[in-house]
Length: 308
Ligand SMILES: Cc1cc2nc3c(=O)[nH]c(=O)nc-3n(C[C@H](O)[C@H](O)[C@H](O)COP(=O)(O)O)c2cc1C
Image (cartoon, rainbow, N blue to C red):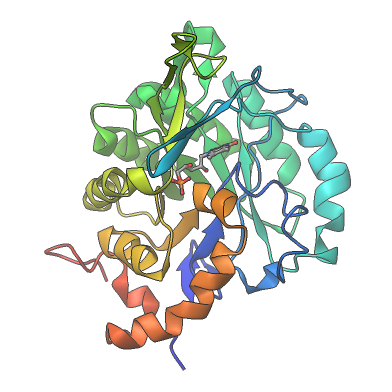
């Protein structure tokens, strides 16, 4: 029997498969497709202190081998999550989840992180810093090492839960940002968030997305994500949740070879809501074909010096 288990900051997961934030809601929409308890965990929709309606429509655009979104953190707000979602989640998911938080100020992140501390079924807080900082002219927190570190320090002080900083690929040195987060106390790094892009409607000669630009994700971004995870593995000594374009068991393993301890799957859930279960079903046979007994041994194995 192949061993699929992995460990993130002392939390042992049955397997590394985690649906990614924004593509799995809070699990409710998927719970009738398959038993969600087969998953390692899942990362919930990016949640902010106040409820948000998100950006105007249209906010999804198709692309070859991928998709653009400018959903803009539509969510019911952290109070709804701590009062209604987390206390009832055991009805369909009996493992801890990863709560992804978003915000436009450091106080936003601190506020939500503090409220999550009381919940045993929160395994990790994933801090999405690919959000505009309204106190810095709307510049993304993730785009500068100093602001990424500042959020990390503040959230770390607000919670006892492990915190994983979710990085944006839209930067010139991902290693520098990851290192700054590690130095500021991050327990782990999640990457990549979406890559900025746009599409234009040829008939109207206007951008397809109401917001002009959006984030590209899906299979098209896999090589970019692998390269970024590879660089971050070299740069830090904390665990990585790798994501971007993963779509089957082979690409899960490829992401682990690049340096990921656990692997998130985003856009592919929107194409095929069963994809995570299908990956788990095919994993033992793929591991056998690749002579892998323990999946955890794959983390960082593509590097000249794999960490112990
Ligand atoms: C529709 C949609 C909504 C998303 N919303 C969030 C979000 O709320 N918070 C977040 O950190 N990432 C969000 N993401 C980014 C994904 O979690 C993931 O980082 C990215 O899509 C790359 O993975 P993929 O190529 O497997 O989709 C969203 C992605 C999509 C497609």
